[in-house]
Image (cartoon, rainbow, N blue to C red; front, side, top):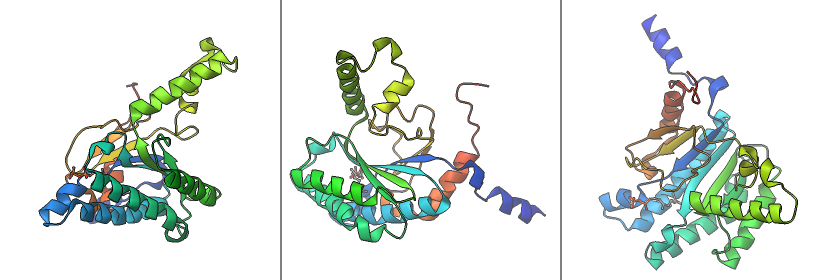
Length: 246
Ligand code: FPP
């Protein structure tokens, strides 16, 4: 009896899945250092980890996942590391057609594109176009993304719309702001996971995480496994979400 109860308690409730998971994939550098490897090896292992996690989330039936791949602040890293990350991202986008086809993943990039190389901008468009009719999980890759930059970008677009008469300032509400974000049309993040023990938002989806349950995991990102994702979802389901009510 006790065992039976325990088993039920440990099963994910498919009717109460998070709709949108945000992931701050932290700790690649430390993971590599601990093994006497270059930081790039940590990022490579991190990209492998990501494939497995997206597949698992998709298999479970999660509809959206946003992963923090490169922040607006990451340009401050040594040029060699920036180049490595950009190449890794490029490979990911190029291979996405093959590697994630079976999973039916729709890939989108969120963030400011103008600072990216022409080659990267072209590839992003190509991958988005190629995967747009897929029916599985939507994977937003946050690339040159910053939560504040996203809000500045939205504010500019909104003011343009007001200036041109398409929008009245008195009609601006939360839905308006939502519709000018890079994640327009998507639900809020309801589960935010950050690996490697840090407990910060680091400018990630400031608007969208307003009511997210946050789970901080000690493991570094390359060690984060599909079973850890399931643990996080179970923990999410164990929390009482009240959205400001009682
Ligand atoms: C943080 O770890 C991680 C990043 C800045 C990059 C995340 C990128 C990946 C997981 C791989 C590439 C992604 C795709 C979509 C192919 P850190 O380097 O800050 O680690 P540290 O805090 O231990 O130094």
